[in-house]
Length: 245
Length: 283
Image (cartoon, rainbow over all chains, first blue to last red; front, side, top):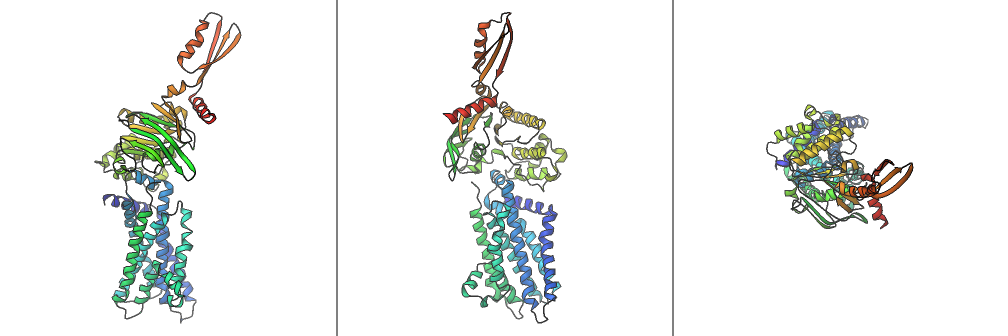
């Protein structure tokens, strides 16, 4: 436990001392959501902005949290600091849990900033309960994305090897998770495949709660799957992170 | 008990054999040099000893412990300085040393960090981020990270690579001080003038140890060229590298007045190591 907090503290100190990394991870989703606003403004007034605004903000948080965490961990490997951590006595679980804790703050900040901007820019009017649920689901998605980043980083020997996972994992989730079209309109196999992506479960909750008259029972199973997703990815990551060559 | 015992250690990466049955032993308190060309397997052997890789065969013991099975205990007792700096550029020297020191449950960590920063002459820049440091200063930070928990054995993988001669000399003063304090040092290098500073060296070639001896003992395996000018006539002889060989070669002359000049050209350690490697390749 003590060493987990030592790793987490070091990750946070590094993030705070790397302004470029911080600005990119927080400013980039805000700028892209603004571009989305400009784009949506060109569409006919009948276009359902609410259907897409929050899910797109959630996707941006998902993508950046995954990418930044994966790259940060791969950098540990290429710099030799991962090996040095192991030789100094840090354990796999301590390193992974430390990273999760360290990136949790960043993921929370990304979730709050991205969601707040989308709600403000698109003038979305939700009650308090809906806003809290939207924040919770985007936050859980960000945590799952950090776990996914940690897991994927174990398959990459350098930063460049992270990028092939973007068309493999992130881009298909755009089309198969209900972000652009309802999954009911997809072929059955594509619908099933969509269930494999964390964005599917997050989008399921988002689409439910932005409709009026939703109840917690309607979304609790999808929220539970999102939590389960994080736990399973954490277990996989702790199994695949190699301590010994 | 020796500090390090290696017997028949092998490591294969697919079809590539990085270690082919390496054998050596290192005594406690010794400054032991691992000498060999690039690709000889020096880093692989060190990684095998610090428990960073799983050998394909053979056995290694460090302080009587198995580097893999007993790695939790072993890692509290060893220090490791890798070939690359392996440090966090965004953190300060103090931040890096403190982070790696904290992994070891070091009592009075703050005090020990200060001490090791003083020892490596980094106190003045202790709080500056590493990306403002020169290459040589980063090597010193890396050494400080390996020393902070006062390990019994230090594994240093080419610690002075790309370091200027002045800093290299300071590093070796530090290594000698550590050895005087009772630490065992296992240092890989391909620089022969550094190998001369070790108590004993092992020559590694293509994953096998082909010779282990003191630097003096290795030098004696070389040859000496003696050129004698006797009354204007040049006589040249090639003799063994031992001092006794030189005495025997000069005895017939008796240093009479007609012996005008004697020139002795002994093989350098580099030449002896290269000839030993070549002999292995031919034989």
